[in-house]
Length: 433
Image 1 (cartoon, rainbow, N blue to C red):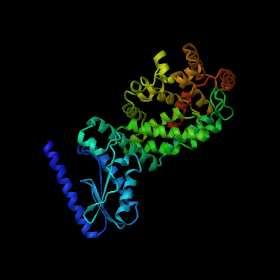
Image 2 (cartoon, helix red, strand yellow):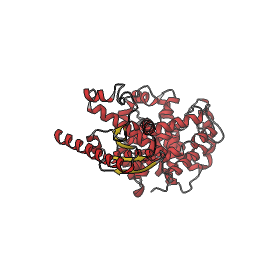
Image 3 (cartoon, rainbow, N blue to C red):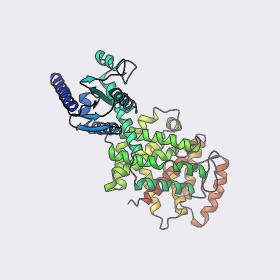
Image 4 (cartoon, one colour):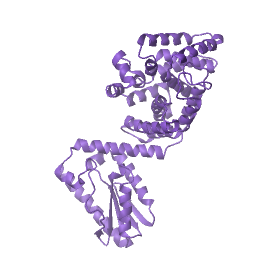
């Protein structure tokens, strides 16, 4: 097998050499030979993604000036460019392309003129795993195959995140998600939560802080949708990376106030699942895709974040919070949605009752924290909210105002439940059955 592989690699090199000579003879100009710096077996195992990166690299070269012609060999994954410019200047340009993105470390550009290799570096490129020269690590087998492949996976993750953010696809799910967030914060009066009229238990934010935050999120919602259309592996890792970039944008817009971190997490998964099941959209399909996406999420994340709010709740009470909700495929979210559907008239009262039902249904770790991790008080609030979800419409606003004054004075709020309410509003907007 090793001999066959070596023979194949040598044959590919010969093909490229002959093709490049022919190209130089035809155009009498410097020639760029572009390929990807990847182990052969990695290319084969991930061929569709490798081709996407290869085509992206070709477009990067085509953005340069004075390209006369180019020839693509997609099967062999190399491309030749005839370019009318000084050979040394071309080499500088290709080096800048190799350094343009972190994943363009995988680009391999060679520049030839008059059958000579044009060089600028005193030494070769550095290894992408350490500071040693790549050729030295290669000769000494410094790094294990698994560590190399892990790093390659990370670079491909970064490539797809870049594509999804910079070439995102507009879609109706993103539009519905943004509307849902605006509807949720506008719902008034609420208990402890930010609404149109008051910050209530949240002295560091107000209604306009939420508007500032929402205005930053549309492009990232589009990116979640795009990832589902393009990516075929490492979906949760890539989704999380986009979400982390979206978080930074949110914090920049709000002066480091956390308005939508939880909602971003939920909508990243929800929009991704809706995108994947767009042709057969149903609660069942969304649930299945979500469970596949989030398999072992609690085990992987809670055990590694024991000092977080979720980690503390998990250690003290065995509560897994919103991670458990998505790992189980939005099971309680869909119960709450079906509860909302029972209302003949969809208005603020029906949404408020649904919010209270959500507080009762899900484990809201943000509520537990605001109750200073007092589990008995937590259960009391949940039972109160269950009663409110069944309260008489004509009297509910009066009791909400009364409870709001009490909860706000004690700094009690249930932001995680409000995030789930946004999902209910979203599901209603997309008219899912």
